Each structure stands twice: as structure tokens, then as C-alpha cells.
Length: 139
Image 1 (cartoon, one colour):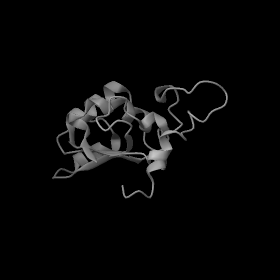
Image 2 (tube, helix red, strand yellow):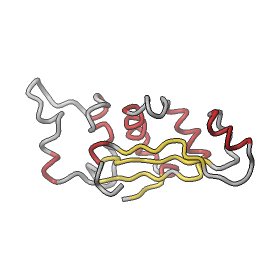
Image 3 (tube, rainbow, N blue to C red):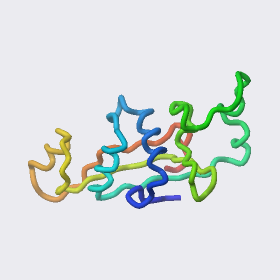
Image 4 (tube, helix red, strand yellow):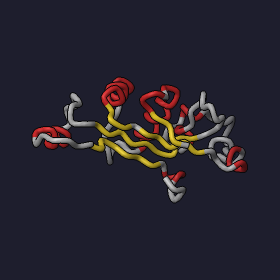
């Protein structure tokens, strides 16, 4: 399912968790920075996927023998951190997202400013991240 992150605040923690997994390739993103980006975004689609029925009981956090299962927000690197607790599809995960800015955004990225300085119409893709567990799934 495709959603618009600009109008889907329930997915912000999932976006931040997925972004944190790829900070080296993109850049760190705080909640305030994410809100500013989305407030200026030309496009901000996100792909939400339902996990297979059998994966709900075989997740890494639930199959641990070291004690009780951890909540998805406690372990951002385990792949479950991309789950939105208030997801309207109950158990859906964030498979990936894209944030694109238009030419009039107030964004301080040197890469963005390079395009902006040349003028004209453009869409600058600031970040596109696909969760590894959603790979080869058509996203």
C-alpha cells in the first residue's frame, strides 16, 4: 500500500527507525528535521507492506530465548522497528520511503543547493530507503 508521509504522522517513528539503519548512506535525521523536510516535500511516498501471516510469530524479537520479547521501538536495527504501532492495517511494516523536494525548498544540503543555484524546475530526491526485509518485493 502506498501512503503519503506528509499526511500520515503515525508512521514518523517507523521512518526515523528505518532512516537510522542507513544513516551512513544518507544522513542522520531527527524528528524535527523530518518534520521540516516533510513540510517542504514535493513528494513523500512510503510503501507499507503486510508481513506474511507466519512471520508474525517467527520474528527475531519473539523467537529470542533470552527472555521476554522486546518491543519494536527498543531495537531499531532488528527490522521490526519499521512497524507502526498505530498502523491502520495492524502489523504492517514500512517497506521503504522517498522524500523529494522542489526548487523552492529552504534546505541547507550542499547537493540540493547545487541544483537550486542552477535554477529551473527540478525534483531533488533527498533520500530513498528500502528496508532489506522488503527487498525484491516490488518496491
